[in-house]
Image (cartoon, rainbow, N blue to C red; front, side, top):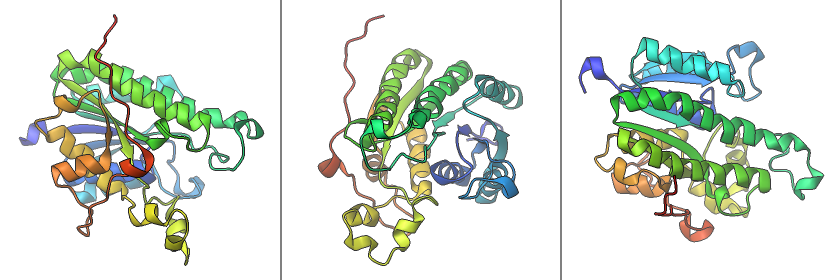
Length: 291
């Protein structure tokens, strides 16, 4: 790709965790990456650390061009202004990664949903709804030039019981959004996919790996097969560049399976395996279209 046509990406919720890793991995391929999130001040930052500015700097160090874009994804006007900025500065958008998601404190708390607070519904607001809004404002820009990819970070929780009905509804909704957006975007040469991630080794999950008996516990097999956030970013970057980009549009895909197909490994050469046999298969889109 020529210097004046380097691809442009947005990664939402990229101050830390999965989003940060995706942004840095895309940067390693020379991509210009807009990094969104609410964390802007390290001294007042999230307990797990990280800011949009730090991630943007990491993107640039990796070989790309990182641009911090503070944005509250619960605020539609913030999101509108984000994509207006990108249109003015770049005139194009090639990749949108919908990753920003509220993680309620009680998410993994044991017990039925009615014994937890309604705070769990935040995952439907900053997650399912915010992904729709970001795609809504990105689509006109992406359809102008075509050749794009909208990727949603999702999980097996869209099909199995995982963390309760609020989480499950959010992930299932994201999966269906990718299927339906793909139909509207197809004639504009823009693909939409939902990616089921495995267990990801983020700052939030790192204490699990440090426990002396971690691999002996019930989740040991998932920890041993964990994916790095950067691994997921390399998968998304390769999917965008692959000639089968539009063939995969509208599908719910398992990141580890696409990685194996495209020859993507972890930095140490390890090939994370799909959890399909343990957790089930993604849903398939219906060929029926009613407009």
